[in-house]
Image (tube, rainbow, N blue to C red; front, side, top):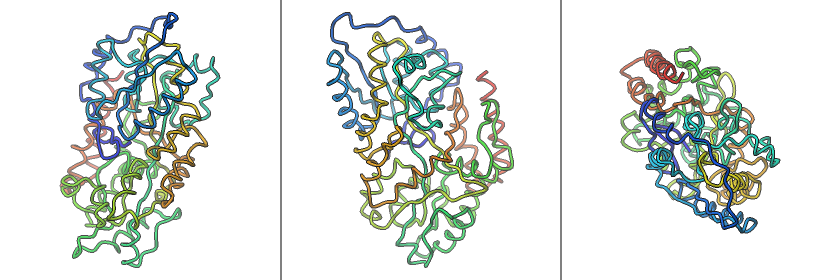
Length: 431
């Protein structure tokens, strides 16, 4: 799922909460009481499980049924909440003490919810039950740990790949991208692929963080947020270089303009068959595979190399509500959701890449016409999605601050310094 003014899920987007940190913390503190002892009292335990993606609901229901078969004293009801309403409803329910027993969590919200006592600490329970976090990429487990305590078990993950239109490459006489490509190869190919008279562009270069400039910032040797989480890296030369890679593509006319990519979502431009290359998350695979205009003409490879290889990795985790009346049973359910068995069910659906190591092959086989191994090869050098205690406070400022750089009315270095100032101010308020 992509993070850009929210979480993109398939063709949809979750609007992230834009309240200032103090307001959000104030609301969440009402839900911070520690959970009680729990227990079923001898009767059947009823649990609720909230998700936001209807495309994943069938697999989640199948997992629930498999869990219930081995835990006949527990019944789980899956709650599907519209993606645009998910975090607003979670905030309201947590404040009112009525949040679901188990629910999906993403990286940008994890620290905020954990730091305010909304999530049940899992470290001791996982150790007791023999759940080994080594079964998941460390870059994912770290997203759901706060001050040394684990609060979530990874469910799935996504990385970013370079998609290309073979038909356009063939027409321009350009060799297909591969794992030896660099930034320069991308720029050179984009120049040859662009044909203004036919409305063809070499690449779509939107101002997207997770898919685009976070990756090139890391590839340039920079960072978005410092390792200690206290300062922005946007004013550093490497970060500016990573941003400039994209603004140069737009400036040179090798990508549609910012306005064009605002009027029509960039993935749709790629799906029209008029874009030669597009950086896309693994969540886009199923959509591309059913788009008649391009589905037989495209493929994917790993991201090109900058000064080094890097790619953003993100993924969801399942978490337990701290005030659940049934912490024992809710934890059992979360542990099953993170199991190899559950991961294999997810993989077979073809919608997301399961987080449990060694279960991804079924996901690749669900769409065998594309080289989806590329997304998995990148895990070895993946970098966690940049987050902080209140990610929204600075991330939601990125589009407005960077827009002038993408439209050519402001130098990218100036915009980067402005973003660093805004981000540092937001991070200061997190202390």
